[in-house]
Image 1 (cartoon, rainbow, N blue to C red):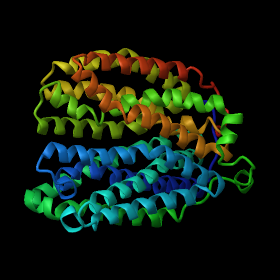
Image 2: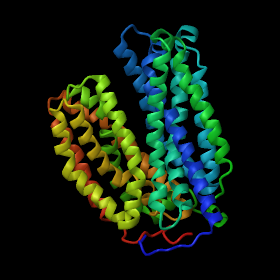
Image 3: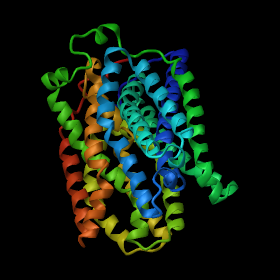
Image 4: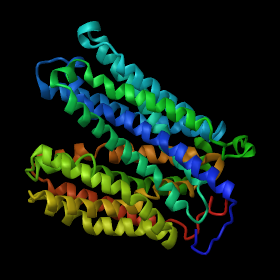
Length: 432
């Protein structure tokens, strides 16, 4: 991609492509809302499925079910990547959001331990595994579709809306729970109120399903009929270097993303000594600003090039992670914390705004969704999913700064793999 490209689109073509971006990203928002609302509502329903009389034990068991859903993502990335490359992006996205809808509805009506005994937590686990498959397939297919349908010359800007909606889904999940807390008592929330967000998620997924059914297909019939379409053999035989490169920079990208988003609230409370409610306000504000940053950094990448953005991400991440975490370590001011976290998330935005697009440009259409989704899911599950566990393990061992060093090293790795990116992408950049 170079800034000199000046493709021409009719007004009708632009309208169709922008509508496709909106429809695809709306499903992404719903998927992440449904997946993360479990985490935010679990404080109220944990005792309904894992009764023990010990709140910490109940939360741990609930968190373990959440983690299992996380670990299902690589399988989902493989299944839905194969579907998207062999049957079509549209069908893959429709099936994905339909599965998430079914999962949310199932949790909303699921009987508790008091009603069906041990079957309740078992069924909850199975439903979360089902949803984990869905969200695992969402990233790769949505990233591929949005990259293919985006206006050439503005692909960074339009593709950035994948993370706008990803973060938006998390924020809406938090907001839904906060609103319920204003109108329902704690007893009501534990008795039945916790089911409301899952009903909301199921309804939103149905709306997204209707929108996604209107999408046009972006992969050609000859690509879907390719003998190696949607196969791991096709990737490892012909695109092994690209696959490894994507895992290389995604490992650091996922790690730093989860460090400054999901783990950061616990860090502010557990290490900085901030009050939980204050930390929640700081993180909600920082995540909102982070969401708004994505299109701006996508536009920046359109001007300076994706490779340069990725190298800036790796370099600034390597230089800035340790001092930012160190300054947060002894800081109790919410204003300073907000500023430092915002700086960190600005660095992360250099990657997240174009991460899906950079991956999509590494693979030809017949294995693009699989290459993007499976490589991302592997790195994300290993490095992103373990971020909180590794951080807390270092802290528990009395060497919390070891985690700072770990993230810094992985950012150096991300920088080195970003240097492997071609100055001119191998695929997609000339597609109209």
